[in-house]
Each structure stands twice: as structure tokens, then as C-alpha cells.
Length: 131
Image (cartoon, rainbow, N blue to C red):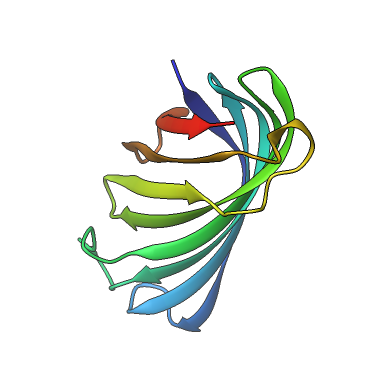
């Protein structure tokens, strides 16, 4: 199973107020198992619609930098996410940023999805790629 766990999440409001419409910045780190083996650092820009938000229609962009292995090959690469989220869970589509791979992952291209319920210890992902 392809899964990741959240190791750290630090979030700060950029503008607006807690409970109301606001923009926040989050810095997170994750550990990945499955086709991607390693760790990542992710920077997210989040929009919250307000109290009891049901904002699954809004998107929040982010960049995530992986360090580890794909298909047994070692290096780093960056993906660009478009997250949707609400109080129940998250979903994302992502793609490898062209030219961002290093080491044995220098030629990596691909895309995938992330999804899961809020509060779960592990969330699943898909990743289709070429090396």
C-alpha cells in the first residue's frame, strides 16, 4: 500500500481571523512508504471559508520536496499539489515539477493523487511515473 504519515504540521494565519474567512500558511513534513520511500517537506497556502467550512470546492496550492527512493532509485524531486479540503478530509492531484529531479531521479516525470480523512494516522496516495 502507498501511504504517508504526517510527522510535523506548523500552521499560521497570514490574513483574516480564526473562525472567519482566512488565508494560512503551513509547513509540514511527511514520511512515505510504498512506491515512494523517504521523507518530504511541504509548504502549503491554505484558504478557509470560515466557521464550519465546507470548502471542498476551493483549492490550495503547495509544493512538496521528496528525498528518498522511487522504484529503488535514489534522489530528490518536487511536486506541485492542488489540494481540496474540508473538516472531513483532504484530496489532491499532483505532478512532478519538470526538471526538479536529482541523482538517479533526474529524469523523473509523473503525477498522482493523495486522499484521506482528517485525523487518520496514514493517508493513501497514487503515483504513476516514468524514469
